Image (cartoon, rainbow, N blue to C red; front, side, top):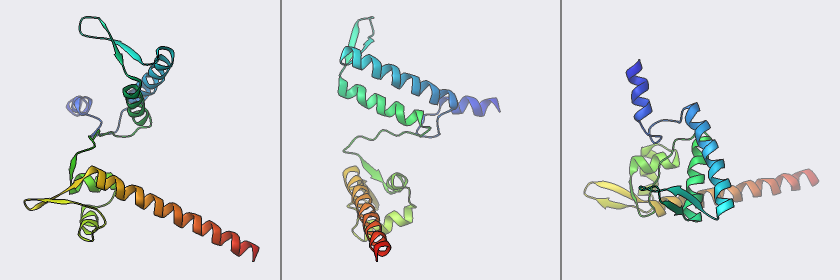
Length: 154
């Protein structure tokens, strides 16, 4: 039993949700960093030799966003923008099954590249699909609300 707990402590938040202690730590750290950035127009930390290192505000904001996700109890994966995803990674990011994602790829809804016998999905293409899907859902909800108002008035 102790081995399992030890293994979880070493595994990253890409593989498991954060513990209550990690959630609490992330929330306090996000607040502290936000306050420090507001006071100093950036974040200052100690470098290798104890020399101050200034973290640019844009990088500090990324750190705060990351900590915010952890403090909400979310597992976190950082993915560089130019990344090519496997079909399983892409399916996980859309919260759909891999077979459903494969149907989306084959039907042309999401751009992909073939690498040997495997498909790879460019992250920007996946994000574009997700944003378009969210826009279509928002449009549909607006239309339903409009129809509901017409029905109530009629």
